[in-house]
Length: 409
Image 1 (cartoon, rainbow, N blue to C red):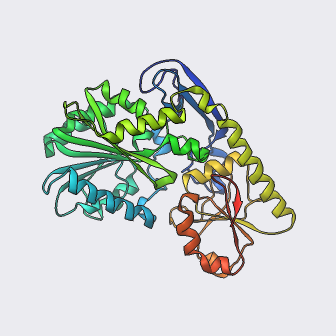
Image 2 (tube, helix red, strand yellow):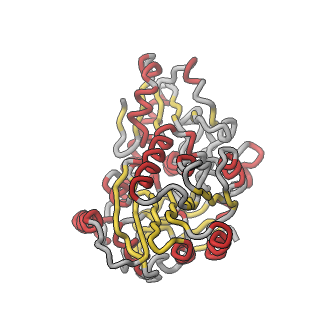
């Protein structure tokens, strides 16, 4: 079965669920395709719901994991220099606060080893990665990597082979999990009594305040805030003891949890909870304009791009991140609107974007060609990219920034 729809909240199991955003039917964002496989492309509803009980914002439509994270997964974290830098400093923070040389660190959804590579040689590391090609890239860096999805069973096996873990991390993956009970129980079993579970996910407050509706896609089942996370960990005798807001991916939250300890909870948790309360994240009313705001950006962007095309000018797109495919499909763009998309990921080059079927090409094309307009799909790296493409801009290319509001730079 490739798709099912939940009828209860995945954190509190309540059934008080209200739809707050509908983006239509989309193919999975990382399933790049080619001309001969277009007929096999499947689309699923992309709808977001609010839980009236614990206030988790979530998708109820769940696409089968093997369709989202199949053998050849398109996303290699290390292809992004800002992310490599981010994870290096993340590792430094963990070393100074939570982990000592020789301790075991387990990274769930370890991708190509972007975090763990910073601990090789000083700590014991184990990656867990379901996508075969990405796991292979991590092993090539000397990072022991288990292929598969993290479960209670796998936690038992790891304890038998390696002992318990001082730090378990799950970055940009904790929000991808449908069965949160399985993973939290597995984490609790695998952690030492003084161990720490740390996760990074998109942060709901940033998503709502900056209109980042394009960060909604089938892999992202949950859009976290502090309150539902406290509820989730509390059910397992664990507690959130520290939270840090991060700029990555348009705004993320790094959450530290441990077995309930009686130790003081850091002020950051109370402060962020209060900020969410003030921003209205704990009430359905806050999301009343969510749909309208997304439609307004779509309308403005579509009319801008089609006006440019009517003037016989060229529009291309920059970066083919997952969020970009949500945006392209929600806007209904095709190759008639956007001639090609550039991306540095070798796997994507030569394929077509899912749903919109726009060819993906190497960014080298922009060394010899100057399109009049470039739609920046990877808008979360706006400053980095605008600086990097100074020469292209000097030749006359203008960048269209879609989020948080449509502007031309």
